[in-house]
Length: 122
Image (cartoon, rainbow, N blue to C red):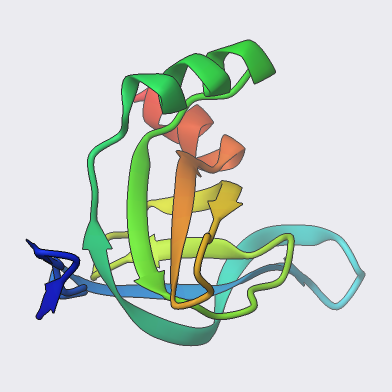
């Protein structure tokens, strides 16, 4: 597609699927916490994009780390949503969202705190 004498790049979203949902606490019959479970609410095709230096500088100044940056078709996602990518068991927190045109949504992901503790203790 030609636009202002330049070619406009089409959004492909062909890197796989993200599964978004919430973490549900599992309890035994006495009400004691026995674990947590990812409860899927939906899925979206995604495209992984490069993390810019500016993104890392902003993240560092706000006290978080960007592990992945992805682009998905625009959707309203809950604030406390968790993300799983393809069939990987790693769970990510969405630390920032960005959309300039409400056609695509950039999600800045950080490995969820509990997941990070498990990885670091291995």
